[in-house]
Amino acid sequence: MSKTKIAPSLLAADFGNLQRDIEMVNNSDADWHHIDIMDGVFVPNISYGMPVVKTIAQHATKPLDVHLMIVDPDRYIKTFAELGATYLTVHYETCPHLHRTIQAIKAEGMKAGVALNPHTNVNLLKNVIKDLDLVLIMSVNPGFGGQSFIENTYEKVHNIKELIKESDSSALIEVDGGVNSKNAKALIKAGADVLVAGSFIFKTDDPTKTIQELKKSTDRWSIFEL
Image (cartoon, rainbow, N blue to C red):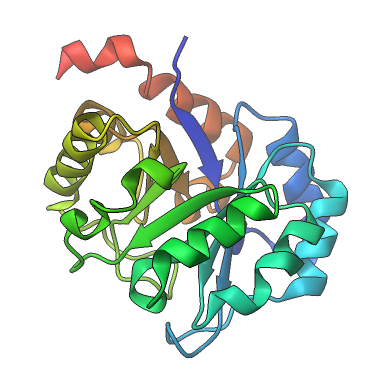
């Protein structure tokens, strides 16, 4: 069985039928609900706020993987803990006191993640990697769904995997942006543990089947086919 986790991004769900899509993820082979919070400042788009996250939490039966693409995320750490987030990921680029932010997330009982934009070097996490539960590698520039996958992501995933091993960290590697069945195996081979997919899942005729096929395609035994 594949150990890879699949986290459908609800940003690509049908918001006119949000409960339906949440329940689809609940009943699928997916592992987490991925929730993107955008503020229109750090990224050029606005997604949704606390009332929507509260609604998602009310219907979700799988862990909430919350990705904050916002400035000054420290203001909202306690709020997302109260909303039921399991993982809370902040961007390296928005946290001048990153170690303090990570510790604040953990103090609220959540698992702490740090996201890196495509231009950000993975070695910048060297001094906090042992404190992290998750490293999110952005494989597109954050802010919009449906973008094309950035090819140097494979090397970046490999590099962060090496840093995790060298540091004896237990952090998972998550990849977000342009993930599909064509690049999933290579991402797993490079070291990814969690794949976020939005449009690739929700824009298909049968999202449940798409999740199932993506999960199967990431079976760790299949990497030997590459």
